[in-house]
Image 1 (cartoon, rainbow, N blue to C red):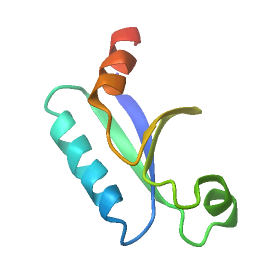
Image 2: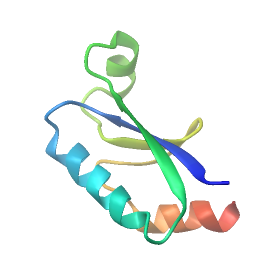
Image 3: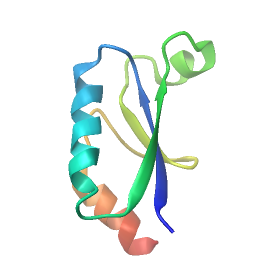
Image 4: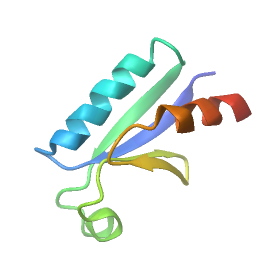
Length: 80
């Protein structure tokens, strides 16, 4: 069964676009799907993440933010 991640982003965020591209490349190595959630206009998500986007999560676990950390992904898949 493929892992499922959520990426919290903000429209127009270049770091967000870079993380999504890095995730697309990472799919060559690992089997996963991601949901992309734009925090813009959601007061709860904006309060939680503010300008600290993108944020990659697996369920309630925050894996990394700003940049995709390949070593964190490796650790995540090693323990799965």
